Amino acid sequence: MTTTPSPSIAPSPAGVTALLACPLCHGALEGIEALPHIDALPCRLCGASYPVRDGIPFLLPPATAHLPAHDELDHVRGAGHKHAQSVYYDREVAAEFEVQRPHGAPALYRWLLEEKFRRSIDRLPPLAGRTVVDVCCGSGMDAEFLERAGARVLALDISEGCVRRARERARRRGLAYVAVVGDVERLPLRDCAVDVAYVHDGLHHLADPLAGVREMARVSRHAVSITEPADAAITRLAVRLGLALAREEAGNRVARLRPRDVIAALAGAGFEAHARRYAMYYRHTPGAAMRVLSSPALLPAARVAVRAADAVIGPAGNKLVVTGRRAGNAKSAG
Image (cartoon, rainbow, N blue to C red):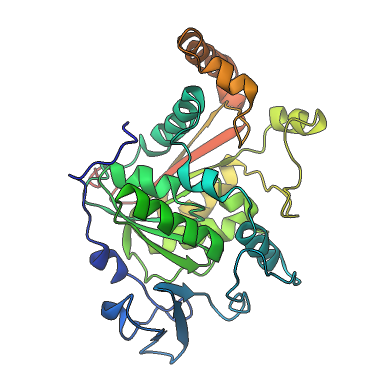
C-alpha cells in the first residue's frame, strides 16, 4: 500500500458533504451545498442549528454541544466523559507527529500500521468509489489510507483539535476527504447513508462502545469494519506488567471489546459479522527500539518475527477485527 500522494485518486468532497444530516432527527441541513462559505447549518425538519467555524461543521447533539470552540491551549476542564476526551485531544501536544504519521516514522512502524489497515479492510467489499464514514478519525491517518484505497471519505471526530489536524493532513497530502466535528453515538447521517462505516481504535474511548457499534450499523448500507483492543488475557497480563494501560491519559477507562458482544450488536442491526483476533504491539510514539529494528539489516527479520508471533498467539491476541455485512448484501456487496 502506497503512502505517497496519488493525484489519480480524487473523490468528490461535495458528494460526501451532501451526506451530512441533523444528528438529532436525521433531517436535511439547510445550506449544506454552500459549505464552507456559511456560518450555520439549520435543520429543515426540527429547526436545530449547527455552527460552522472556519469551514468546519460542528454537528454535535445538545448532549455534547456544550463542547466549546477552543484553541489548543485555552480549555477549562468540565464534567463528563466526552468533554474530558475532547479537552484532552484538543490539547494534544504532538500535533506535527499526529498530522504526519506514518510519514517520516521508522519503516517497521509504518509497516505495522499498514498491516493493521490491510487486516481491517480485507473482508470488506472493494472500496474504490464507495462512500465511507471514518468515525473517531483522530488526525486523519485512516481517512488517508481509506482515500488511497479509492474511497470517498467523511472523517468525523468529537475533538475539534483532531478535526483540524485531519484537515491539515488533507491539505498537505492533496487529499479530498471531508472532516467534521461529530459524535459517534449520534452520527450526523441518515440511515444507510454511506456504503461502509469504519473505525480504528476509537470506540474504546467510549463509556459504552456498543452504542457506537449500533450507530455505525445504522448509517451503513453495506458493511462495517471495527478494529479495537480485545478483551484478552494477554492484554490483562500486559496491564499488570505496565505494558498496556487500564486508563488512558485522558482519564477514560480503556474499554476492551469481546467478539461476541460486537457480533451480537451488529446482528441486532441486521448484519452478518465475522470476528478475528491477532497479536500486535507498538508504542504510539516510536522509540529507539523501533528505529533500530527499522534498519535495512534488521527490518526483514523483524517482519518475519511479527508474523511468527501472530501465527502462535494471534487467535488469543490483543487486537480484534470485526467485519459486518448487511444481511442480503453479504455476497453481493463486493
